[in-house]
Length: 162
Image (cartoon, rainbow, N blue to C red; front, side):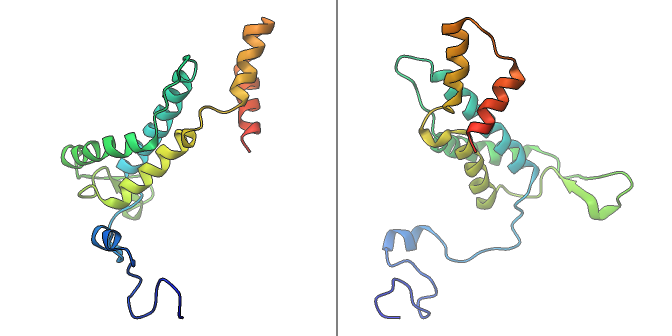
């Protein structure tokens, strides 16, 4: 099609040279994705970023830690885990070898790194600070002297995020 950025002849290559030189347009389907490293580092990064951004939001000049910080920090951690974790397979009792897994399926790869970055992005609240309902819980406690139970506060915050 005339006027489009991509045609069938260029196989989806970017018209921008820097992108073409940096990003591959092919996929390696043999790379493991749902690994222990991805789940562990992803959940830890999401929780840590969420906690730290909430903690720092109470400052007069709040600090905001974005997912780019985690994206940079997690690469050497992932490579270290690939070198340090055992390659032994663990099986789930009674389910046979089809339900076995390993803590270390091989070298740390770009797919794991991207998914960890997505987890971190969810925890960073996109750099916009904490959930707005946290302010309600804070105001009720600070200005009205009443306490809200953890469950009620948690439900309030979760339901206002939908």
